[in-house]
Structure formats: C-alpha cells, structure tokens
Length: 236
Image (tube, rainbow, N blue to C red; front, side):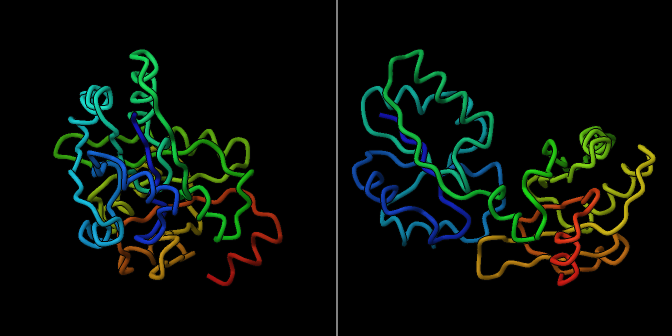
C-alpha cells in the first residue's frame, strides 16, 4: 500500500495516525524538493523513530515508489499537506491505474497558516510560484497571476522557490512588477508560519530587503482590504 503523509508545518506537526502508519511501513521516503524545511532531518527522525530515505524530484517523478508499493507498505512524507504539489497527484493517479491501494493522511499547510495575517482566505486568488532566477534566465510569468488577481481585488500568495533568499526574491519582485507595470504598496513576508519561530512583516518593499528572514517563507501582495484586515495588518 502507498501512503502519502502530511508532516504539517513544524517537526511535531505529524499526526498520531501518521506516526502509527509509519511504524508499519517497510520503507519511508522524505520528499525534499518542494520546500526549505524549518527543521533538520535529524529532528524529524527522532520524532518518527525510523530511518528515512531522501527523495528528490527525479525519484518521485520516476514513480518507482508506486512499484515498490505493489510489494510492501511504503510512505512518502511531505511537508505541509501531501497533495499540494502536482507530482504527488501523479503518484495517486499511477497507483489507481496499477490497482494499488493508497491512503492520504492530510495535515496543515501554508494555506491554513496565512490566515494568521488577518487576510481573509476566501479573498485570495490564484497561487503564484516565484522561481529562482538563473544566469540568462529570468522568468517573470508569476506576475501574470498577480495581475489577474488584482483585476478581481484578490490577494496574491507567492510561494518562493527552494534556496531563494529574501533579498533576491525582493529584487525579482521589484523588477517583475516594473516590467508588468504593477505598483507595489505594502506587502507581507511570512516566515516559518506554524512554528515557534514564525515571523510576519508588513511593510513597503524597499524596507524589506535587509530583513533577516529564515526559510521557508512566502510573500503576499494584498489587494483591496476590508477594515478588519487593515486592523489586524497594522499590528505587523
């Protein structure tokens, strides 16, 4: 059987049920390519009490884990909620086609945690992902989503690529907004939500470059604010 188990947002976030499933699994993989973990693998290993195998994108997308689930109980541990990434949906589809049983054990994700900012969740639009720019490759298409959201007065959640430091991300955002002729006012940077080291900052973009922010973090570009949202945001 194949198990996709959400880890939640901190090292202690895995559910009691998730831990029970892990005990009976022959192999346990830790998906390591969609987020910068706010804790070490060693911390997680101490909590679950079993050896884990790091699984990169190439391995997960090869669907070898589904083949293994034909013969034994296999678990894939995923930070946050287990079906946020499209690769994980593909695993479920492959399991169905191969008549392999599967079970999803859900947990909290960034979509739960961002509500702590005071922004109302039903006022968010489509989610954007900011890639890490490379030499001669500076994709700005994530701003298409921001632009679409702003047309309907929706807030924009921008998920940040693994390894992208805040200063770089802010520079990318500035250049992309200028290219798309989008005026940026105050924005939110949310770091390690759901952990004891969480940090939420609401300020103008030029004041955020030198902030000390730990990964993982996300950026939120608010749209038109309700008076209750304004009141909560003013505290940050």
